[in-house]
Length: 148
Image (cartoon, rainbow, N blue to C red; front, side, top):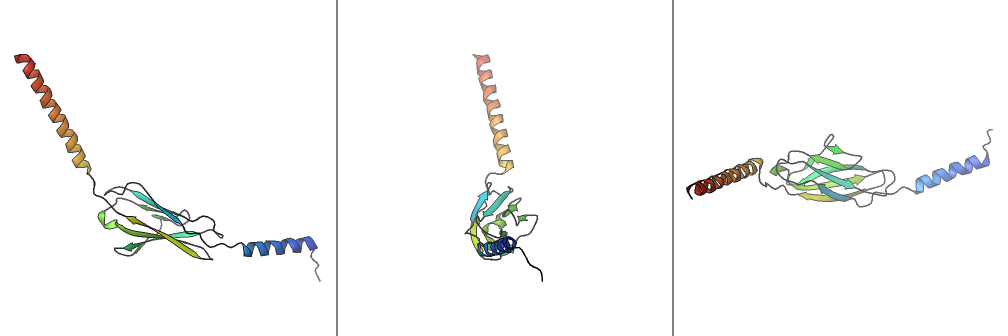
């Protein structure tokens, strides 16, 4: 018969008891949108659920207007981030983050509204138009001073 020393058994029981009793389901996560959601831009949706044991893993789904589940590389299941690149109007909708571990699940959501904002061509046209207008104004001033 094998005899285990008292302190070893006590420490083993303490570890098992504390380990099993300290399981914590995910707290309600907080969802955030990072970046400016304009057509052609990139944004990151992030989800964090503190105080859970064991550690949580994250899943992002788009609910409305059409259901979609995301996977790597866009989704980081450990950090809870979802990278959306080259946004289009069709990517707008409600995105739900689920934080889950063996003990439970919690979720939060973000509504992504993609705006069309001024495109690069509009901005370039405004700059060129302004420069041409200033050039014409300078030409008129020079012409006026030569005649006067």
